[in-house]
Image 1 (cartoon, one colour):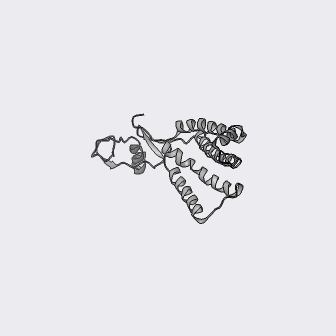
Image 2: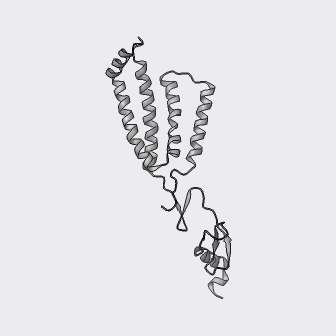
Image 3: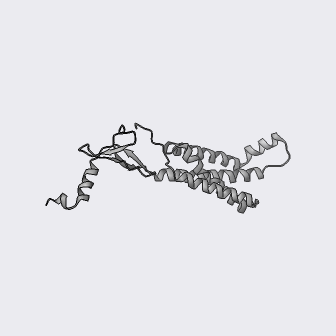
Length: 188
């Protein structure tokens, strides 16, 4: 007895590795063995895997993208808190000209502009590595951090509706994080 007749599963495994997946066979994506006599349904690739020349290739989520998304959340959180603190430090006389003068002399507003610049440069890097439809919802985690830091640092109110909203934001971010971060363009 040959080595392939003793273990029929071994022969099947060898043949399956050489099957091709023509796209025009009944339109359903079927596997055809090398002899061309057997047609079997093609197994779909898991959601985190793309098909590239008949091979499963996992899309890479780089640490640079993760760091960029984290920085986007941190920059936005810092920006919002510093901005609010700077507004609270403005005189309350209601005169627009005095307010503009106070803004230009307040170092917190200069820091706000600096944070906006940092956020802009970081966002350019993030968008070069991920789809906008993925990155923007992930950065909504800054809503969560701003909420908690505003409650503790600025002594703002936290009621049931706001907490429910924060929970919904977290759920939304979790759902988005389960999707691919970059759309695979056919033919690339």
